[in-house]
Amino acid sequence: MIELKNVNKTFKVAKRNAGFKEALKALFKKEYEYIHALNDVTFTIGDGEMVGYIGPNGAGKSSTIKIMSGIMSPDSGECVINGRVPWKDRKEHVRDIGVVFGQRSQLWWDVPVIDSFELLKDVYKVPEAEYKKNCSDLVELLDIGEIIKTPVRQLSLGQRMRCEIAASLLHSPKILFLDEPTIGLDAVSKIAVREFVKEINKEKKTTVILTTHDMQDIEALTDRILLIGKGRILLDGSLDDLMTRNTSKKTLTVAYSGTLPALENMTVVKDIGGHAEIVIDTAVMPVAAAIAAISAAVDIKDVSVEGTTVDEMVVSLYKEFRI
Amino acid sequence: MRKYLSFFRIRFIGGLQYRAAAWAGVVTQFAWGFMSILMYKAFYNSAPESFPMEFSQLTTYLWLQQALLAMFMPWLFDSEIFDNIISGNVAYELCRPCDLYNMWFVKNAATRLANTVLRCIPIIVVAAFLPYPYNMSLPAGWVQGILFIVSVILGFSLLVSISMLVYISAFYTLSADGIKILTVTLIEFFSGAVIPIPFFPDSVQTVFHLLPFASLQNTPFLIYVGYTIGSDALISVAVQAFWLIVTLVAGRLLIKRAVKKVVVQGG
Image (tube, rainbow over all chains, first blue to last red; front, side, top):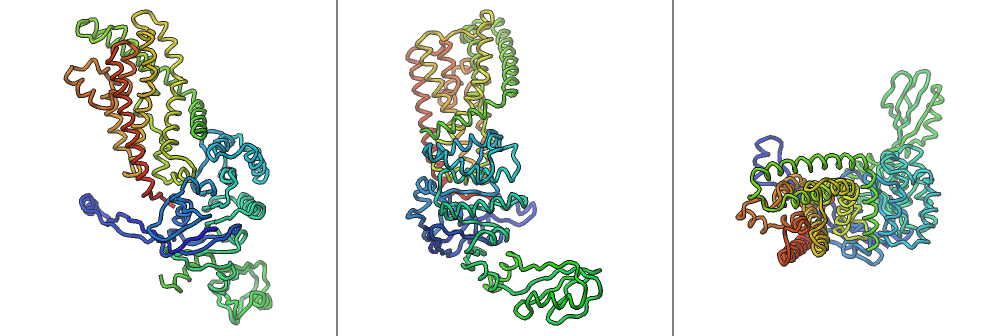
Protein backbone atom coordinates (compact mmCIF):
# COMPACT_ATOMS: atom_id res chain seq x y z
CA MET A 1 0.00 0.00 0.00
CA ILE A 2 1.45 3.31 -1.08
CA GLU A 3 -0.06 6.50 0.23
CA LEU A 4 1.10 9.98 -0.63
CA LYS A 5 -0.65 12.93 0.92
CA ASN A 6 -0.02 16.57 0.00
CA VAL A 7 3.61 15.99 -0.83
CA ASN A 8 5.60 19.12 -1.70
CA LYS A 9 9.17 19.46 -2.84
CA THR A 10 11.00 22.61 -3.84
CA PHE A 11 14.46 22.82 -5.34
CA LYS A 12 16.74 25.80 -5.14
CA VAL A 13 18.44 26.36 -8.47
CA ALA A 14 21.25 28.84 -9.02
CA LYS A 15 20.50 31.09 -11.93
CA ARG A 16 22.27 33.75 -13.89
CA ASN A 17 21.98 35.43 -17.24
CA ALA A 18 24.39 34.66 -20.03
CA GLY A 19 27.59 36.63 -20.48
CA PHE A 20 30.94 37.24 -18.84
CA LYS A 21 29.76 40.17 -16.77
CA GLU A 22 26.90 38.21 -15.36
CA ALA A 23 29.21 35.28 -14.58
CA LEU A 24 31.51 37.63 -12.69
CA LYS A 25 28.60 39.10 -10.80
CA ALA A 26 27.41 35.62 -9.89
CA LEU A 27 30.72 34.99 -8.13
CA PHE A 28 29.74 37.48 -5.46
CA LYS A 29 26.02 37.42 -5.41
CA LYS A 30 24.19 34.33 -6.45
CA GLU A 31 20.60 34.49 -7.45
CA TYR A 32 18.41 31.54 -6.81
CA GLU A 33 15.18 30.46 -8.24
CA TYR A 34 12.81 28.13 -6.49
CA ILE A 35 11.32 25.37 -8.54
CA HIS A 36 8.27 23.60 -7.23
CA ALA A 37 9.01 20.08 -8.35
CA LEU A 38 6.04 18.62 -6.53
CA ASN A 39 2.92 20.48 -5.62
CA ASP A 40 0.41 18.86 -3.30
CA VAL A 41 0.84 15.41 -4.79
CA THR A 42 -1.71 13.00 -3.38
CA PHE A 43 -2.46 9.45 -4.49
CA THR A 44 -2.92 5.93 -3.19
CA ILE A 45 -1.74 2.76 -4.88
CA GLY A 46 -2.99 -0.61 -3.65
CA ASP A 47 -1.05 -3.88 -3.45
CA GLY A 48 -0.59 -5.67 -6.74
CA GLU A 49 -1.58 -2.71 -8.87
CA MET A 50 0.27 -1.78 -12.01
CA VAL A 51 0.38 1.96 -12.46
CA GLY A 52 1.78 4.05 -15.27
CA TYR A 53 3.18 7.30 -14.06
CA ILE A 54 3.49 9.64 -16.99
CA GLY A 55 4.22 13.22 -17.76
CA PRO A 56 6.71 15.30 -19.74
CA ASN A 57 10.33 15.89 -18.75
CA GLY A 58 10.66 17.91 -15.60
CA ALA A 59 7.10 17.18 -14.52
CA GLY A 60 8.18 15.65 -11.23
CA LYS A 61 8.09 11.95 -12.04
CA SER A 62 11.60 11.17 -10.91
CA SER A 63 11.22 13.32 -7.82
CA THR A 64 8.20 11.29 -6.79
CA ILE A 65 10.06 8.03 -7.42
CA LYS A 66 12.99 9.30 -5.39
CA ILE A 67 10.71 10.17 -2.50
CA MET A 68 8.94 6.82 -2.69
CA SER A 69 12.24 4.95 -2.77
CA GLY A 70 13.56 6.84 0.23
CA ILE A 71 16.39 8.63 -1.54
CA MET A 72 14.95 12.08 -1.06
CA SER A 73 12.75 13.60 1.58
CA PRO A 74 9.91 15.98 0.70
CA ASP A 75 9.59 19.46 2.20
CA SER A 76 6.16 18.71 3.54
CA GLY A 77 3.43 16.12 3.24
CA GLU A 78 3.15 12.48 4.14
CA CYS A 79 4.28 9.37 2.38
CA VAL A 80 3.65 5.98 3.91
CA ILE A 81 4.58 2.80 2.09
CA ASN A 82 3.71 -0.53 3.70
CA GLY A 83 3.47 1.27 7.02
CA ARG A 84 6.87 2.91 6.78
CA VAL A 85 8.07 6.39 5.96
CA PRO A 86 10.66 5.67 3.24
CA TRP A 87 13.30 8.29 4.03
CA LYS A 88 13.08 7.69 7.78
CA ASP A 89 13.39 3.90 7.73
CA ARG A 90 15.49 3.90 4.58
CA LYS A 91 17.35 0.65 5.21
CA GLU A 92 14.23 -1.26 6.20
CA HIS A 93 12.16 0.23 3.43
CA VAL A 94 14.57 -0.52 0.58
CA ARG A 95 14.50 -4.22 1.38
CA ASP A 96 10.91 -4.23 0.17
CA ILE A 97 11.45 -2.37 -3.06
CA GLY A 98 13.23 -3.00 -6.31
CA VAL A 99 14.28 -0.10 -8.47
CA VAL A 100 15.33 0.08 -12.09
CA PHE A 101 16.46 3.43 -13.42
CA GLY A 102 16.58 3.03 -17.18
CA GLN A 103 19.35 5.55 -17.56
CA ARG A 104 21.57 4.28 -14.80
CA SER A 105 23.17 0.96 -14.01
CA GLN A 106 23.30 -1.05 -10.85
CA LEU A 107 25.48 -3.82 -12.24
CA TRP A 108 29.21 -3.88 -11.79
CA TRP A 109 30.83 -2.79 -14.98
CA ASP A 110 33.87 -5.03 -15.17
CA VAL A 111 32.67 -8.34 -13.71
CA PRO A 112 30.22 -10.90 -15.07
CA VAL A 113 26.55 -10.26 -14.33
CA ILE A 114 26.32 -13.29 -12.09
CA ASP A 115 28.93 -11.77 -9.74
CA SER A 116 26.71 -8.71 -9.35
CA PHE A 117 23.78 -11.01 -8.58
CA GLU A 118 25.80 -12.82 -5.91
CA LEU A 119 26.72 -9.50 -4.38
CA LEU A 120 23.10 -8.36 -4.30
CA LYS A 121 22.21 -11.63 -2.64
CA ASP A 122 24.53 -10.79 0.22
CA VAL A 123 23.49 -7.15 0.31
CA TYR A 124 19.83 -8.04 0.75
CA LYS A 125 20.61 -11.12 2.83
CA VAL A 126 18.51 -13.30 0.53
CA PRO A 127 18.43 -16.90 1.82
CA GLU A 128 20.32 -19.32 -0.42
CA ALA A 129 17.24 -21.34 -1.44
CA GLU A 130 15.17 -18.26 -2.27
CA TYR A 131 18.06 -16.77 -4.23
CA LYS A 132 18.54 -19.94 -6.25
CA LYS A 133 14.85 -20.11 -7.10
CA ASN A 134 14.51 -16.42 -7.94
CA CYS A 135 17.67 -16.50 -9.97
CA SER A 136 16.69 -19.49 -12.07
CA ASP A 137 13.15 -18.14 -12.55
CA LEU A 138 14.39 -14.75 -13.63
CA VAL A 139 17.08 -16.18 -15.88
CA GLU A 140 14.47 -18.29 -17.63
CA LEU A 141 11.78 -15.62 -17.89
CA LEU A 142 14.12 -12.95 -19.14
CA ASP A 143 16.11 -15.35 -21.27
CA ILE A 144 19.47 -14.24 -19.94
CA GLY A 145 21.03 -17.65 -19.30
CA GLU A 146 23.52 -17.12 -22.12
CA ILE A 147 24.70 -13.73 -20.98
CA ILE A 148 24.96 -13.79 -17.20
CA LYS A 149 28.53 -15.03 -17.38
CA THR A 150 29.57 -12.13 -19.59
CA PRO A 151 31.06 -8.96 -18.11
CA VAL A 152 28.52 -6.13 -18.18
CA ARG A 153 30.73 -3.93 -20.36
CA GLN A 154 30.31 -6.38 -23.23
CA LEU A 155 26.51 -6.51 -23.15
CA SER A 156 24.19 -4.66 -25.48
CA LEU A 157 21.75 -2.20 -23.98
CA GLY A 158 18.83 -4.59 -24.37
CA GLN A 159 20.73 -7.44 -22.73
CA ARG A 160 21.90 -5.17 -19.96
CA MET A 161 18.40 -3.88 -19.27
CA ARG A 162 17.08 -7.41 -18.89
CA CYS A 163 19.86 -8.12 -16.42
CA GLU A 164 19.11 -4.88 -14.57
CA ILE A 165 15.51 -5.91 -14.16
CA ALA A 166 16.52 -9.35 -12.94
CA ALA A 167 18.93 -7.73 -10.48
CA SER A 168 16.18 -5.59 -9.02
CA LEU A 169 13.95 -8.60 -8.35
CA LEU A 170 16.40 -11.03 -6.74
CA HIS A 171 15.25 -10.15 -3.24
CA SER A 172 11.55 -10.60 -4.12
CA PRO A 173 10.52 -7.00 -3.49
CA LYS A 174 6.87 -6.18 -2.93
CA ILE A 175 7.09 -3.01 -4.97
CA LEU A 176 8.98 -2.49 -8.20
CA PHE A 177 9.77 0.98 -9.49
CA LEU A 178 10.63 1.09 -13.16
CA ASP A 179 11.92 4.45 -14.28
CA GLU A 180 11.90 4.47 -18.08
CA PRO A 181 12.82 0.80 -18.40
CA THR A 182 12.45 0.69 -22.18
CA ILE A 183 14.41 3.81 -23.00
CA GLY A 184 16.69 3.22 -25.97
CA LEU A 185 15.66 -0.40 -26.45
CA ASP A 186 14.83 -2.00 -29.79
CA ALA A 187 11.37 -3.41 -30.49
CA VAL A 188 12.24 -6.99 -29.56
CA SER A 189 13.78 -6.06 -26.22
CA LYS A 190 10.92 -3.70 -25.46
CA ILE A 191 8.39 -6.43 -25.96
CA ALA A 192 10.43 -8.87 -23.89
CA VAL A 193 10.63 -6.37 -21.03
CA ARG A 194 6.90 -5.63 -21.20
CA GLU A 195 5.95 -9.28 -21.25
CA PHE A 196 8.12 -9.91 -18.28
CA VAL A 197 6.75 -7.03 -16.22
CA LYS A 198 3.23 -8.21 -16.93
CA GLU A 199 4.17 -11.72 -15.89
CA ILE A 200 5.80 -10.69 -12.63
CA ASN A 201 2.83 -8.51 -11.72
CA LYS A 202 0.41 -11.34 -12.37
CA GLU A 203 2.38 -14.20 -10.84
CA LYS A 204 4.01 -12.61 -7.83
CA LYS A 205 1.50 -9.82 -7.24
CA THR A 206 4.32 -7.32 -7.26
CA THR A 207 3.11 -3.74 -7.27
CA VAL A 208 4.63 -2.08 -10.32
CA ILE A 209 5.04 1.63 -10.79
CA LEU A 210 6.28 2.53 -14.22
CA THR A 211 7.36 5.88 -15.57
CA THR A 212 7.78 6.18 -19.28
CA HIS A 213 7.44 8.38 -22.31
CA ASP A 214 6.54 5.41 -24.44
CA MET A 215 2.80 5.30 -25.01
CA GLN A 216 3.03 1.66 -26.08
CA ASP A 217 4.48 0.75 -22.69
CA ILE A 218 1.44 2.25 -21.06
CA GLU A 219 -0.97 0.62 -23.48
CA ALA A 220 0.63 -2.77 -23.06
CA LEU A 221 1.07 -2.68 -19.33
CA THR A 222 -1.02 -0.51 -17.15
CA ASP A 223 -4.66 -0.29 -16.22
CA ARG A 224 -4.25 2.85 -14.28
CA ILE A 225 -2.53 6.08 -15.22
CA LEU A 226 -1.30 8.90 -13.08
CA LEU A 227 -0.55 11.93 -15.19
CA ILE A 228 1.69 14.54 -13.67
CA GLY A 229 2.54 17.95 -15.07
CA LYS A 230 4.50 20.77 -13.48
CA GLY A 231 4.44 19.01 -10.14
CA ARG A 232 0.70 18.41 -9.98
CA ILE A 233 -1.30 15.28 -10.48
CA LEU A 234 -3.47 16.19 -13.43
CA LEU A 235 -5.30 12.97 -13.93
CA ASP A 236 -5.76 9.69 -12.12
CA GLY A 237 -7.71 7.15 -14.12
CA SER A 238 -7.60 4.56 -16.86
CA LEU A 239 -6.05 4.92 -20.28
CA ASP A 240 -9.49 5.26 -21.82
CA ASP A 241 -10.34 8.09 -19.43
CA LEU A 242 -7.26 9.88 -20.60
CA MET A 243 -7.99 9.32 -24.26
CA THR A 244 -11.63 10.35 -24.24
CA ARG A 245 -11.19 13.16 -21.82
CA ASN A 246 -8.53 14.68 -23.91
CA THR A 247 -9.54 14.70 -27.51
CA SER A 248 -11.41 12.70 -30.03
CA LYS A 249 -9.31 13.86 -32.98
CA LYS A 250 -7.48 11.34 -35.10
CA THR A 251 -5.13 11.69 -38.02
CA LEU A 252 -5.48 9.47 -41.05
CA THR A 253 -2.46 9.11 -43.28
CA VAL A 254 -3.58 7.90 -46.68
CA ALA A 255 -1.63 6.84 -49.76
CA TYR A 256 -3.93 6.82 -52.77
CA SER A 257 -4.17 7.13 -56.53
CA GLY A 258 -6.63 9.47 -58.18
CA THR A 259 -7.68 12.93 -57.02
CA LEU A 260 -8.94 13.60 -53.58
CA PRO A 261 -12.18 15.60 -53.60
CA ALA A 262 -13.31 17.82 -50.73
CA LEU A 263 -14.79 15.56 -48.09
CA GLU A 264 -17.42 16.31 -45.52
CA ASN A 265 -16.38 16.46 -41.82
CA MET A 266 -12.73 15.96 -42.70
CA THR A 267 -9.89 18.43 -42.79
CA VAL A 268 -7.13 17.76 -45.29
CA VAL A 269 -3.95 19.04 -43.65
CA LYS A 270 -1.51 17.94 -46.29
CA ASP A 271 -1.91 16.53 -49.78
CA ILE A 272 1.24 15.97 -51.80
CA GLY A 273 1.62 13.54 -54.70
CA GLY A 274 -0.82 10.91 -53.56
CA HIS A 275 -0.08 11.16 -49.83
CA ALA A 276 -2.61 12.94 -47.68
CA GLU A 277 -3.00 13.66 -44.00
CA ILE A 278 -6.60 14.02 -42.95
CA VAL A 279 -7.80 15.01 -39.49
CA ILE A 280 -11.18 13.80 -38.32
CA ASP A 281 -13.18 14.30 -35.16
CA THR A 282 -14.37 10.85 -34.14
CA ALA A 283 -17.26 12.37 -32.20
CA VAL A 284 -18.70 13.59 -35.50
CA MET A 285 -17.15 11.15 -37.93
CA PRO A 286 -16.12 7.63 -36.84
CA VAL A 287 -12.88 6.27 -38.30
CA ALA A 288 -14.65 3.51 -40.22
CA ALA A 289 -17.02 5.94 -41.87
CA ALA A 290 -14.17 8.24 -42.80
CA ILE A 291 -12.21 5.44 -44.44
CA ALA A 292 -15.33 4.30 -46.29
CA ALA A 293 -15.90 7.82 -47.57
CA ILE A 294 -12.33 8.18 -48.73
CA SER A 295 -12.22 4.81 -50.43
CA ALA A 296 -15.44 5.68 -52.26
CA ALA A 297 -13.72 8.73 -53.70
CA VAL A 298 -10.22 7.43 -54.42
CA ASP A 299 -8.32 4.17 -54.66
CA ILE A 300 -6.60 3.70 -51.28
CA LYS A 301 -3.19 1.98 -51.35
CA ASP A 302 -2.34 2.32 -47.71
CA VAL A 303 -3.90 3.90 -44.67
CA SER A 304 -2.84 4.42 -41.06
CA VAL A 305 -4.72 5.92 -38.14
CA GLU A 306 -2.94 7.79 -35.40
CA GLY A 307 -4.35 9.11 -32.20
CA THR A 308 -2.73 11.84 -30.20
CA THR A 309 0.53 11.18 -28.37
CA VAL A 310 1.00 11.45 -24.64
CA ASP A 311 2.86 14.68 -25.04
CA GLU A 312 0.06 16.20 -27.09
CA MET A 313 -2.41 15.09 -24.47
CA VAL A 314 -0.37 16.65 -21.74
CA VAL A 315 -0.12 19.88 -23.66
CA SER A 316 -3.87 19.98 -24.06
CA LEU A 317 -4.32 19.15 -20.40
CA TYR A 318 -1.99 22.02 -19.58
CA LYS A 319 -4.28 24.28 -21.51
CA GLU A 320 -7.21 22.85 -19.68
CA PHE A 321 -5.64 23.42 -16.28
CA ARG A 322 -4.01 26.67 -17.31
CA ILE A 323 -0.59 25.92 -15.88
CA MET B 1 29.25 -7.65 7.80
CA ARG B 2 28.83 -10.30 5.16
CA LYS B 3 27.55 -7.83 2.59
CA TYR B 4 30.59 -5.62 3.05
CA LEU B 5 32.81 -8.64 2.59
CA SER B 6 30.99 -9.25 -0.68
CA PHE B 7 31.61 -5.69 -1.79
CA PHE B 8 35.23 -6.25 -0.91
CA ARG B 9 35.34 -9.47 -2.89
CA ILE B 10 33.74 -8.08 -6.04
CA ARG B 11 36.07 -5.12 -6.03
CA PHE B 12 39.05 -7.30 -5.32
CA ILE B 13 38.19 -9.62 -8.21
CA GLY B 14 37.63 -6.58 -10.45
CA GLY B 15 41.02 -5.18 -9.47
CA LEU B 16 42.79 -8.47 -10.19
CA GLN B 17 41.57 -8.38 -13.78
CA TYR B 18 43.91 -5.63 -14.83
CA ARG B 19 47.13 -7.61 -14.96
CA ALA B 20 48.85 -5.66 -17.70
CA ALA B 21 48.50 -2.49 -15.64
CA ALA B 22 49.99 -4.33 -12.68
CA TRP B 23 53.05 -5.48 -14.66
CA ALA B 24 53.55 -2.01 -16.01
CA GLY B 25 53.32 -0.76 -12.44
CA VAL B 26 55.93 -3.24 -11.24
CA VAL B 27 58.38 -2.17 -13.93
CA THR B 28 57.83 1.50 -13.20
CA GLN B 29 58.31 0.98 -9.51
CA PHE B 30 61.58 -0.91 -10.00
CA ALA B 31 62.87 1.90 -12.17
CA TRP B 32 61.73 4.48 -9.66
CA GLY B 33 63.18 2.52 -6.74
CA PHE B 34 66.61 2.17 -8.37
CA MET B 35 66.63 5.81 -9.38
CA SER B 36 65.90 6.99 -5.85
CA ILE B 37 68.50 4.68 -4.39
CA LEU B 38 71.16 5.97 -6.79
CA MET B 39 70.24 9.55 -5.92
CA TYR B 40 70.49 8.93 -2.17
CA LYS B 41 73.73 6.99 -2.75
CA ALA B 42 75.29 10.10 -4.25
CA PHE B 43 74.07 12.10 -1.28
CA TYR B 44 75.41 9.48 1.17
CA ASN B 45 78.82 9.36 -0.51
CA SER B 46 79.29 13.10 -0.34
CA ALA B 47 78.11 13.61 3.26
CA PRO B 48 77.49 10.36 5.22
CA GLU B 49 77.52 12.27 8.54
CA SER B 50 74.43 14.34 7.63
CA PHE B 51 72.47 11.22 6.66
CA PRO B 52 69.73 10.74 9.27
CA MET B 53 69.76 6.92 9.10
CA GLU B 54 71.86 4.01 7.91
CA PHE B 55 72.04 3.69 4.13
CA SER B 56 70.61 0.16 4.31
CA GLN B 57 67.68 1.44 6.37
CA LEU B 58 66.95 3.95 3.65
CA THR B 59 67.01 1.35 0.87
CA THR B 60 64.60 -0.82 2.86
CA TYR B 61 62.37 2.23 3.33
CA LEU B 62 62.42 2.94 -0.41
CA TRP B 63 61.67 -0.67 -1.40
CA LEU B 64 58.82 -0.81 1.08
CA GLN B 65 57.49 2.40 -0.39
CA GLN B 66 57.60 0.93 -3.90
CA ALA B 67 56.14 -2.43 -2.89
CA LEU B 68 53.23 -0.86 -1.01
CA LEU B 69 52.77 2.03 -3.42
CA ALA B 70 49.22 1.02 -4.37
CA MET B 71 48.33 0.99 -0.71
CA PHE B 72 49.59 4.48 0.03
CA MET B 73 49.51 6.40 -3.23
CA PRO B 74 47.24 9.36 -2.60
CA TRP B 75 46.15 9.87 -6.20
CA LEU B 76 44.31 6.58 -6.51
CA PHE B 77 40.67 7.60 -6.35
CA ASP B 78 37.72 5.52 -7.40
CA SER B 79 36.35 7.58 -10.26
CA GLU B 80 33.17 5.52 -10.09
CA ILE B 81 32.26 7.07 -6.75
CA PHE B 82 32.75 10.61 -8.06
CA ASP B 83 30.76 9.72 -11.18
CA ASN B 84 28.05 8.23 -9.03
CA ILE B 85 27.71 11.37 -6.98
CA ILE B 86 27.98 13.80 -9.86
CA SER B 87 25.74 11.92 -12.30
CA GLY B 88 23.20 10.97 -9.67
CA ASN B 89 23.85 7.25 -9.91
CA VAL B 90 24.24 7.41 -6.16
CA ALA B 91 20.47 6.93 -6.24
CA TYR B 92 21.07 3.23 -6.76
CA GLU B 93 23.49 3.03 -3.89
CA LEU B 94 20.92 4.68 -1.66
CA CYS B 95 18.36 2.08 -2.69
CA ARG B 96 20.39 -0.58 -0.93
CA PRO B 97 19.99 -1.60 2.66
CA CYS B 98 23.58 -0.58 3.30
CA ASP B 99 25.51 2.10 4.98
CA LEU B 100 26.92 4.29 2.23
CA TYR B 101 30.07 5.15 4.17
CA ASN B 102 30.95 1.55 4.96
CA MET B 103 30.23 0.49 1.41
CA TRP B 104 32.51 3.08 -0.16
CA PHE B 105 35.19 2.59 2.45
CA VAL B 106 35.27 -1.12 1.76
CA LYS B 107 35.30 -0.61 -2.01
CA ASN B 108 38.24 1.72 -1.78
CA ALA B 109 40.19 -0.47 0.54
CA ALA B 110 39.55 -3.42 -1.77
CA THR B 111 40.76 -1.62 -4.89
CA ARG B 112 43.96 -0.58 -3.17
CA LEU B 113 44.59 -4.01 -1.68
CA ALA B 114 43.95 -5.79 -4.98
CA ASN B 115 46.49 -3.53 -6.65
CA THR B 116 48.96 -4.03 -3.82
CA VAL B 117 48.71 -7.81 -3.86
CA LEU B 118 49.43 -7.90 -7.58
CA ARG B 119 52.42 -5.60 -7.35
CA CYS B 120 54.13 -6.10 -4.04
CA ILE B 121 55.23 -9.72 -4.34
CA PRO B 122 57.57 -9.40 -7.36
CA ILE B 123 59.04 -6.22 -5.92
CA ILE B 124 59.65 -7.68 -2.47
CA VAL B 125 61.13 -10.90 -3.84
CA VAL B 126 63.57 -9.19 -6.18
CA ALA B 127 64.44 -6.43 -3.69
CA ALA B 128 65.16 -9.00 -0.97
CA PHE B 129 67.80 -10.71 -3.11
CA LEU B 130 69.67 -7.60 -4.15
CA PRO B 131 73.22 -7.28 -2.73
CA TYR B 132 73.66 -5.44 0.58
CA PRO B 133 73.15 -2.47 1.17
CA TYR B 134 70.85 -2.10 -1.83
CA ASN B 135 68.44 -4.80 -0.72
CA MET B 136 65.28 -4.79 1.31
CA SER B 137 66.02 -6.31 4.71
CA LEU B 138 63.76 -7.94 7.30
CA PRO B 139 62.08 -5.83 10.03
CA ALA B 140 64.46 -4.48 12.65
CA GLY B 141 63.14 -7.02 15.18
CA TRP B 142 60.02 -9.07 15.86
CA VAL B 143 58.47 -6.35 18.06
CA GLN B 144 59.12 -3.88 15.28
CA GLY B 145 57.60 -6.37 12.86
CA ILE B 146 54.35 -6.70 14.83
CA LEU B 147 54.14 -2.94 15.39
CA PHE B 148 54.72 -2.47 11.68
CA ILE B 149 51.72 -4.64 10.81
CA VAL B 150 49.47 -2.73 13.23
CA SER B 151 50.80 0.56 11.96
CA VAL B 152 50.41 -0.35 8.28
CA ILE B 153 46.76 -1.22 8.87
CA LEU B 154 46.16 2.04 10.72
CA GLY B 155 48.01 4.12 8.14
CA PHE B 156 46.17 2.44 5.29
CA SER B 157 42.77 2.95 6.95
CA LEU B 158 43.67 6.56 7.62
CA LEU B 159 44.46 7.13 3.94
CA VAL B 160 41.16 5.57 2.89
CA SER B 161 39.23 7.67 5.40
CA ILE B 162 40.98 10.82 4.18
CA SER B 163 40.01 9.83 0.62
CA MET B 164 36.45 9.38 1.89
CA LEU B 165 36.42 13.03 2.94
CA VAL B 166 37.40 13.97 -0.62
CA TYR B 167 34.62 11.79 -2.07
CA ILE B 168 32.06 13.25 0.31
CA SER B 169 33.11 16.76 -0.66
CA ALA B 170 31.68 16.01 -4.12
CA PHE B 171 28.22 16.09 -2.54
CA TYR B 172 28.84 19.67 -1.53
CA THR B 173 30.89 21.08 -4.39
CA LEU B 174 29.64 19.17 -7.47
CA SER B 175 33.20 18.87 -8.71
CA ALA B 176 35.74 17.55 -6.28
CA ASP B 177 38.67 18.12 -8.66
CA GLY B 178 40.06 21.09 -6.74
CA ILE B 179 39.91 19.39 -3.38
CA LYS B 180 41.32 16.23 -4.95
CA ILE B 181 44.40 17.99 -6.34
CA LEU B 182 44.94 19.87 -3.11
CA THR B 183 44.67 16.75 -0.97
CA VAL B 184 46.93 14.71 -3.22
CA THR B 185 49.62 17.41 -3.13
CA LEU B 186 49.40 17.81 0.62
CA ILE B 187 49.61 14.07 1.20
CA GLU B 188 52.47 13.60 -1.28
CA PHE B 189 54.60 16.20 0.40
CA PHE B 190 53.68 15.91 4.07
CA SER B 191 53.52 12.11 4.25
CA GLY B 192 57.14 11.73 3.22
CA ALA B 193 56.25 10.14 -0.12
CA VAL B 194 58.59 12.46 -2.01
CA ILE B 195 61.38 12.74 0.56
CA PRO B 196 61.26 10.67 3.76
CA ILE B 197 60.42 12.91 6.71
CA PRO B 198 63.71 12.31 8.64
CA PHE B 199 65.55 14.07 5.80
CA PHE B 200 63.85 17.38 6.56
CA PRO B 201 65.35 19.89 9.02
CA ASP B 202 64.24 19.33 12.63
CA SER B 203 62.13 22.47 12.84
CA VAL B 204 60.25 21.52 9.67
CA GLN B 205 59.74 17.99 10.98
CA THR B 206 57.91 19.44 14.00
CA VAL B 207 55.32 20.89 11.63
CA PHE B 208 55.07 17.58 9.77
CA HIS B 209 54.32 15.72 12.95
CA LEU B 210 51.45 18.03 13.82
CA LEU B 211 49.65 17.02 10.62
CA PRO B 212 47.74 13.78 10.05
CA PHE B 213 49.75 12.99 6.90
CA ALA B 214 52.85 11.88 8.82
CA SER B 215 50.72 9.01 10.14
CA LEU B 216 50.27 7.50 6.69
CA GLN B 217 53.30 5.71 5.23
CA ASN B 218 55.93 7.45 7.30
CA THR B 219 55.02 5.81 10.62
CA PRO B 220 54.90 2.14 9.56
CA PHE B 221 57.96 2.36 7.31
CA LEU B 222 60.12 4.03 9.96
CA ILE B 223 59.03 1.41 12.47
CA TYR B 224 59.94 -1.39 10.04
CA VAL B 225 63.44 -0.11 9.36
CA GLY B 226 64.02 0.49 13.07
CA TYR B 227 64.28 4.28 12.91
CA THR B 228 61.36 4.84 15.28
CA ILE B 229 61.84 2.52 18.23
CA GLY B 230 60.63 1.85 21.78
CA SER B 231 58.12 4.23 23.30
CA ASP B 232 58.42 6.58 20.32
CA ALA B 233 57.05 3.82 18.12
CA LEU B 234 54.12 3.23 20.47
CA ILE B 235 53.36 6.95 20.60
CA SER B 236 53.42 7.25 16.83
CA VAL B 237 51.00 4.33 16.51
CA ALA B 238 48.69 6.02 19.05
CA VAL B 239 48.84 9.22 17.00
CA GLN B 240 47.79 7.21 13.95
CA ALA B 241 44.81 5.81 15.84
CA PHE B 242 43.87 9.33 16.94
CA TRP B 243 43.83 10.70 13.39
CA LEU B 244 41.97 7.66 12.13
CA ILE B 245 39.19 8.23 14.66
CA VAL B 246 39.02 11.95 13.85
CA THR B 247 38.72 11.39 10.10
CA LEU B 248 36.26 8.52 10.47
CA VAL B 249 33.94 10.56 12.70
CA ALA B 250 34.18 13.60 10.44
CA GLY B 251 33.45 11.51 7.34
CA ARG B 252 30.43 9.85 8.91
CA LEU B 253 28.97 13.15 10.09
CA LEU B 254 29.47 14.78 6.70
CA ILE B 255 27.98 11.91 4.72
CA LYS B 256 24.97 11.80 7.02
CA ARG B 257 24.35 15.49 6.43
CA ALA B 258 24.93 15.13 2.69
CA VAL B 259 22.52 12.24 2.31
CA LYS B 260 19.84 14.07 4.26
CA LYS B 261 19.80 16.96 1.84
CA VAL B 262 20.85 15.08 -1.22
CA VAL B 263 19.55 16.28 -4.50
CA VAL B 264 20.13 13.50 -6.94
CA GLN B 265 21.38 15.04 -10.16
CA GLY B 266 19.78 14.57 -13.54
CA GLY B 267 16.56 12.87 -14.54
